[in-house]
Length: 377
Image (cartoon, rainbow, N blue to C red):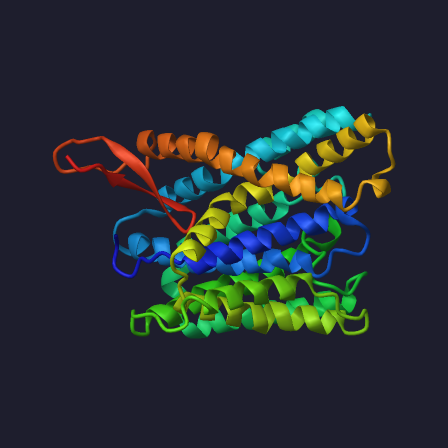
């Protein structure tokens, strides 16, 4: 393990809570109108976590061992398998549930290349949440090229400019919110400001944490991680009055979410709590990438099978969907995503050269970031 590289189970738990919060927002019709709150701010949490985890996992390696091209290849391997699967399920759901297939070959081509479709409203019409994966990939690439230049002042300047952009988004945007911007062509700049602030805030948070003593607080470690996860859930599911919603979202994105994640770096769960956090971290990416197309298929099927209006099936339809989604995403990770990424990393250009020509490798994961480790002889 490289110097400074650590595993953060509490961050995995936060990622899982945020992923489920997104599901509750997009599948609101399964649970009943009005059940979703500020769940869309989970994306900003993901961006902060990405900044923390990428800095932890790759900054040392980029400085001494890893080329930028190898880093980009690793990131593509991390993001693409589940992205393309979610896109394929999205295509299937459109073919099953919709008769509108105009320009579908063009849309499919753009989706395969992970390019936003600027000719329609949604940037990724086959799977709406993929917009944040696109932004995450590109901000990771920017980070890889510029991390040596990212001093404290530079990071502060990027965050300040992005925060001003978020203020402009709130003031001039049609809906005066942050949670709903970034995924359409009309508010794409809002997405740039969201990832610009939160990702580089994550970089800053990890550097601040790494500059302190490495020992973490062991007292209260049975309680504090649960408090942190509960606070994340309450923040994302809150329903502030319309008049203060813009102010609430700005404070959550700019101040509260970074503060919560920084605290989470210092407190690690133990025992069953650690296992639960690791499980939710394991399935979180799959949950995020496939939940919308699966929700569309699920909603279509239960209405056809039962013959009842969807309103008559809430909230039990929602609970059933969650009960299906979580184990399905666990299976995706175990039997599809992890094996495929392990194969690509072991046989692709990122395969490291070992001393005695040993090419037996296995995939290891640190907070969702894969790396190759040579098996012991």
